[in-house]
Length: 425
Image (cartoon, rainbow, N blue to C red; front, side, top):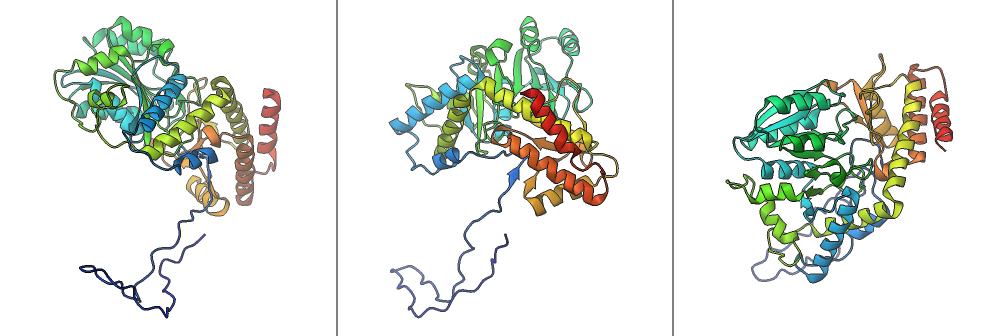
């Protein structure tokens, strides 16, 4: 839908509104403001944000409370309890950082790392690279374990690095690499880190509430996420949980955290029941939205939610393979929430994405870094992970492929997806 931002005002027979003393009058021929906000409808199947449930949108329109109002503090307590359920943790320090998932990443790292600390970082995509960058900005020494994009970090390589690195403050890994669709196993990593006295930091931005994230069982010390992925809440908050071990490190720092805004030692006093010391004004409407999004997760049930993501991803991949799209991520370690596939030879990947958006209102993502122009990143996260959305995308891709002569098997992708669904049930 197009909007006319240059339209002229209608003539009026009413005189100008009288101005108050010291206030400029508004000329009768002054231009009207821009038109009412009416974004085009989109089916969001990219790497984020995902679709948002109407209940979450309604929660955002709830009248505001003050950020120190007793009723709002009760809501904060409820959000913390719900987050503990979704993170599968008993950590008292479980909060929502004001900012997107990247704020969660920065908060976790700059609070744990002091100048001179050694951190081992797994780099197998964009977000491992960012973690290493933040470690350096905090004055730490990042030892990078680099593997081809789409591969996982082998625990044996990690143990070898721990053996030879001396004193290691932390190991930082991306549980769900959004740039490649790789799903990093974490079960062995926590015990390994503890044997060498290192903290474990995990990026769960694209995994929390879409695949299992078992913070306590896996021995994760700091885990952060974002609201706009599998939680299906608008972007703006970063769920974060710290183990008592990690929190002791934060409280025992010898130097101040380089970020005042993300200093968790101060933010903790705002979220801690009984203290509630003012730090910054919380994004109240976003807290409302997160509370409702978490309620939806708990109502569905974590295991049922994980099964739904697995089932829809399997059907999507079955259909995409018939179109010649091969998975980018390592076999056996592919995310069901973010499906990264290599674009078939001869297919103009950018043109397909443009057509999907402009003609059908469907968004999927392209590649980042060395994968730019080579892959599609298709998100089936939260509300976006639905049977009908898989069917819609595959039928539309088949139509586009057929128009360009890239496939001669009309209906094969959709048939493969439906067979996958039938097998799953």
